[in-house]
Image 1 (tube, rainbow, N blue to C red):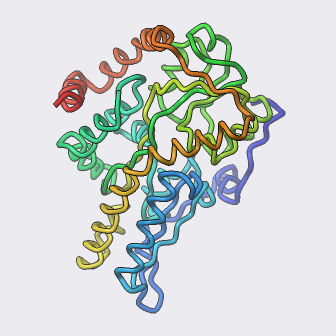
Image 2: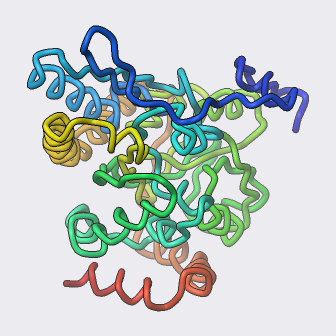
Image 3: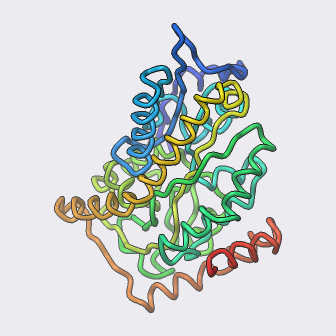
Length: 340
């Protein structure tokens, strides 16, 4: 790693470096004076589709339970980041999580990586067909194999490419170091375009861009804006090449420890909050684009049809590689769900 970039270290990083277990064993929900507190962690700011939807979930739960159930939200990687949030959930150090879908691939669910395929979805309608249909339910149910309860899907919208130059054709990517989240599909996508993928946590991305450790990245515009990446990237290209979504999951023991009435209340509040969040995701991205244009800090580029097709063809090999890993049955089911 370049000496220009020194990642921030928290207490748990120090413990891990010393070989000490930093994450406790599974614990029941925090209870004090008859109040249940649900610990919920995520890596983005509150003013994003995910942050807003989870805040709405908190408000609904606390209102409807008359304060008997509270939700403690740890936003913007303040408790756990990309590198350790999944482990934290599996070990019970956190009760609920809303990780990006690609993160499930590394813990034994490679079929979730299909959501990261480039140019897979053409519209939000197609996304909802998959997530709200039989295939989405099947994916959530499968998480029980790893002591998790899948509770629902949440959109953050389509991703776009940024760097310090326009990224309109595959030639533009050659030699760039592009930050990616922990996803084999997304890393393969960058290599297919001629770039070098660099796996970094979301919370470290802006600093890596500012210091030159990486040259660019991909994000929905709401993430790009709220993380102030426009201050360290001169160009944003509206590729709309990929989708960023999340699954809200709970630790199985925590979920089972809730009394039936509270579990139903939490589930219904979450269902409403996710539905609301999925309706505002596009508006939040649209508003962020307006703010970005007004800031005049970043040049904005729109690929034409020919340029977009060249990008799509360049990443075609990613589909073949993933299909070999997850099997043709999953890909056939996905295509059928998209066009049902």
